[in-house]
Amino acid sequence: MTDLLRPFRGPLTASPVEPVARFVPATVYAAAIVFASSIPGEQIAFQLDDRVAHFVEYFVLGLLLSFAAAGVRGGTGRLASVAILAFVAVFALADEYHQSFVPQRDPSIRDWVFDMLGTSAAVFGARRLAAPKEAV
Image (cartoon, rainbow, N blue to C red; front, side, top):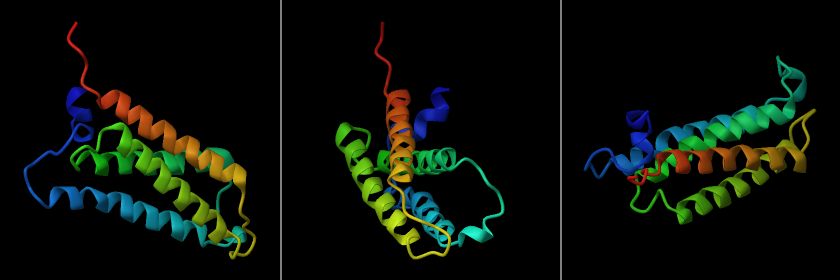
């Protein structure tokens, strides 16, 4: 389990490219969220509970952003967690607003709340699990 959480504990290499490269998965995933939000309601093939879908979708984004932040100096601290949550709060609001222009889709504060719950669970869960354990 320790090796699995290693990427959330800080940089893996001394490469100056690593901090930038760590943000690529989160950026691609955020673009996929925007793309999925552009799909008209009648074209959505499956019907998953909307609250679950939003929670899971943003949980993954929170994990990817936590992974990205861990590659930056100080990226595993409280400030990084707050920055991730602030970014996602604005991103999720923009995404909900964007949906107001898509046929058969509508913005929802409830969806935004589940977006934030998913992100919070991921960010604080990753931070808690990746924290070095104190020697007893």
